Amino acid sequence: MGTKRLVSFKRLMKRDSWKWKSLVSAFKWKRLSLRIGFSFIDDLIFKVVSVFEAIFLVSTLWGKKRERNKTKEKARLGAEVAQLQRAGVPDIRLVAGEPDFDTPAVIAEAEVRAIREGHTRYTLNAGTLSLRTAICRKLEEENGICCTPDEVVVSNGAKQCVIQAVLALCSPGDEVIVPAPYLGSYPEMAKLADSRPVILPTLCSENFLLDPKLLESKITEKSRLLILCTPSNPTGSVYPKPLLERIAEIVTKHPRLLVLSDEIYEHIIYAPATHTSFASLPGMWERTLTVNGFSKAFVMTGWRLGYIAGPKHFVGACNKIQTHFSSGASSIAQKAGVAALGLGYAGVKVSEPQGAFYLFINLSSYYGIEAKGFGKIENSESLCRYFLDKAQVALVPGDAFGDDSCIRISYAASLTTLQAAFERIKKALISLRPAVPV
Ligand code: PMP
Image (cartoon, rainbow, N blue to C red; front, side):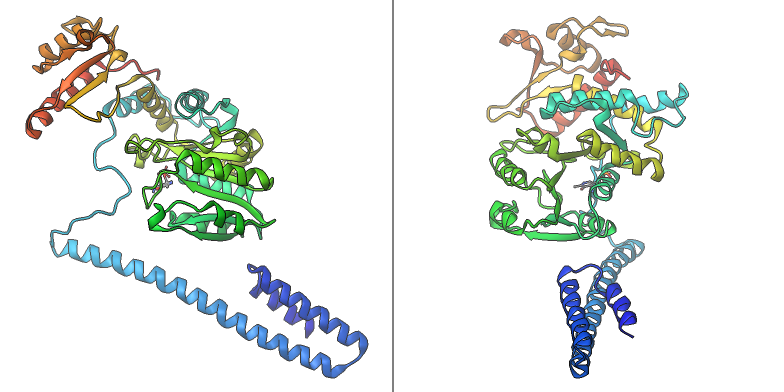
C-alpha cells in the first residue's frame, strides 16, 4: 500500500520541489514509525499523507483547470474576431507580429535564383557554410561578437533556436528565469524540458526592465537559464548597456547560470536607444547563447530562418537536437539569408536625423555598378545624375558637402511628394541591384 501511494505521489508532485521535500520527509517519518513499531504513529502519518495527497490533487487539478480556461478564453477571442470578419465588420487588426510589407525584392530574387540554379537539396544540418560565415561577419561588425562558423547553427526560425537551446541546456528540475511580460513560448519551452519557469515581474514605471536585485534574490543552485529579450516583445523595452553589465556581474557569480539573449528585434530600435548584445560584454561569450533571425528585420516571417551563436559545446548540442528534428533549414531560404545579410552589409546606410529636414544617405555600395543604358555609377555626382535620368528625382551629391559616399535628400515636402519620390528612388536602386554576395 505504501509503495502504491509513493508512486501516485511521485506522479503528482513531479514538478514542485517543495512538494517533493514534504513527501520525502513524510515517508521518512513513516519508515521510522514502522521501525520503532508504533502503529498509531504509522496511522497518523498515513492520515497526514492522505491530507497532503488530497491538497496536491486539488491544487494540481485547479492549476490545470485555470490553464485550460485561459486557453479557451484565447480561442474564444480568436473565434469572435473570425466571426466579425465573416460578418464583414471592418475591424482593425493590430495583432500580427510581422511587418505588413513585402520581403525586399533583392532577397526574393536571390531565392528564385537559388531554385533556378538547383540549390534545392539538403544542406549541412547546422546550415550552409556561406550563411554561417555571413552570420559571423554580421555578428562581428554589428554586434561586437567574434565567432567562427562552427559556433553558429541555422534553424527554421528563431523560435526553433530557442526551444533547441532550452532542451539542450536544461534538465528536469532546473529553473529557467523569464522576466515578465514575456513571449508566451518561453515558459512553455521550459516546461517542455521538464524545467520550472521562474517568472520575474517587472514594472511599467521601470520600462519593464528586469530589476537586478530581484534577479539576484531569485537565483538558486537550480537556476540554469535566464532568457533576455531585447528589444522586447511585447513591451518594446531595450536593455541599456549599464543594466546588461549589472546582469553580467550577477551571472559571473553563478557559474551554472547561462543567458539566452533573444535579439530578433535588434534592428527595430528607436534613437536614442541602442542595441547591446549580451555576448559582447566582457566574459559573457562563454555564458551566452545569442538568438537572432530574419523574420522581423528582413520581413521574412514565412521563410522560417533563424540562428543561434554561442560556444561550440552548447550550439553543438542544439545541432544534435536539430539533426533529429528538422535536419536543418530550407536550402533556398538560406541562400536568401545570405542575400539579406549582404543587404545589411553592403546596402543603404543612414543616420537618423535629429533636426533640420535632410537625410544624408550613404549609397556608396552602388558605386562601381554598370547601369543599363546609363554607364558606370562612379560617385555621388553620377548617382544623382542616374536618379534624375531614370527616376526624374533631383537630389544633391554628398560631394558638395565634403562626403562623396552620401547623397542629400531634402524632405521639406508633402508626404505625397515624398512617397512618390521614394517609390521612384527604390525602383531605380532595385534595377541597379546592390553587389550582394549570394
Ligand atoms: N523571439 C521573439 C521575441 C519573437 O517575437 C518571435 C516572433 N514572434 C520569435 C522569437 C520567433 O521568430 P521566428 O519567426 O524567427 O521563429
